[in-house]
Length: 371
Image (cartoon, rainbow, N blue to C red; front, top):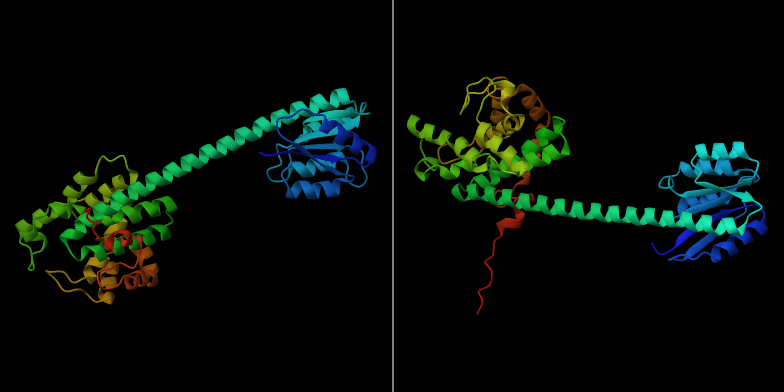
């Protein structure tokens, strides 16, 4: 704060000049600037557009009086705490009571006395200065807290992205798949009415749904033919492995990711795995990712299968509402079919995602070797 600004309002020039001269005599640690007006309307225009610390206004003025000005000032944004001193006649008790009720800070009595005026204005300015300094300190503290939270969020995001890439190294198709699943899940959550924070969390957590596959042997994970029942049981354990890897984290998004990893193969009718949970006993984030995951996986060619055409995939999702999938989630998913297709088209087929989820990490270049 470089200056303190006082607005003076009186229709008599003599009193304006007197107040200006008295303010010049106030000993204060920072400069005091005065703005004088002979009517309340002009003063109000200035107050509305500028930073003001104190207003000293006569009560008796043509057109808009001091009480009316006080009412207008207190309704202005960020002007609730501006010091307002009303100048009244000594006998005007009813006016003083009304002014106090409307938020007046203090009073001066005409004829003005410099022995009262100077110390009163100085003391109130000191209070105003302390208030502004505390407010600025609070704003600075809020800025530092917001910056720290942003840094923590960026750190958490990087950890999640790097974990997601671990699965990509095991399966060349995973990079595209996990990004699309993230975007589909975010879109579904948004249209289900979940908060921005939840949608952001599921966007970051969904790519980790198959992270447990890093513990599955290559002979099973990359097998070109159909898995035997014994191999299928081993494959199913990727849900448990993913949960063990992610659970008990202090990072909220990783806790969500742990639930998704564990439950995204559970079915609405109880026929899924690993626990055969049914209906809403399955966490909603896992129910959302289940739809997104199956939709994308069915359309992709894998070592053990050909990809389905897109209409067959949508038909499968619709037919399994209430069986494999939460019917409400399927309803929302189908309602945003056009946006789903746009997301699918947005990812280039050459192995490089066009969205931002992995862009910071795809084009890796080794650091120069020191000589």
